[in-house]
Image (cartoon, helix red, strand yellow):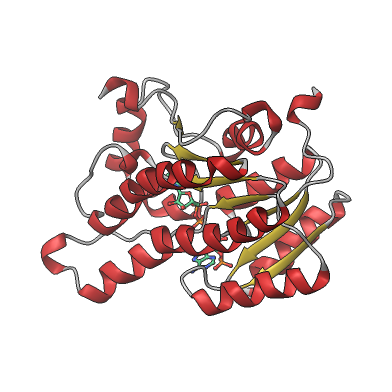
Length: 255
Ligand code: NDP
């Protein structure tokens, strides 16, 4: 691999990485040389993910915490500080989605999605950036948006609001933290085959719509996101800041 893309000597924390896209980012960054810190909320998922990485010889560990809970995030970063572990790369990936018309949406539904998909990126990003600034070594923050960072769909209003927020939070982080040699960018995945979309893939009409509305004619695969994550985590993107890169098979191009 070209040295510009190497992550050797770097430590990457990927939130929501026990499954799905987060796990794909973790496996990809590990292949580029990074040490990996996984995160999720369920022990069984964590055990499986860690053993898959460790079987490949990856230096990986994991922390169970809820990305919406400030205290839990601070505890983990304080523990890493105490061990002398520095996080060089953060991927704010953890997210949830459920479908409900806005007229039926409770405030608690709204709050849970906003907290998990948007406030989490502020909390984890801030905790990491404070330490990157103190070390004077810079760093990389990658916030995970979505097609809904650009366009709304019915029945996912809080998700869309959160992902739209991710786009401007990414720009805000870039505007404030570029001076500390921290580059903050985002990835907006298209429709990708993960657990989150299991019900949609099995819904014949939705599946047909995804395939016919996308110029690539198909869903994306988690491993197709890895190259963009490595690029944004590496020196190859040293002067790229505040950008969203959409990895969607061309879907947005047709809007
Ligand atoms: P999955 O549902 O497949 O996986 C979600 C991951 O997040 C799991 O590892 C889960 O861990 C973890 N997680 C969930 N809630 C929390 C929480 N509160 N705190 C910490 N970890 C949590 O999702 P995807 O891989 O499909 O999606 C990942 C990201 O990509 C999300 O932000 C999503 O919005 C975004 N995205 C996905 C698209 C897709 O088509 N799949 C399209 C566009 C964006 P555990 O099981 O241990 O709780």
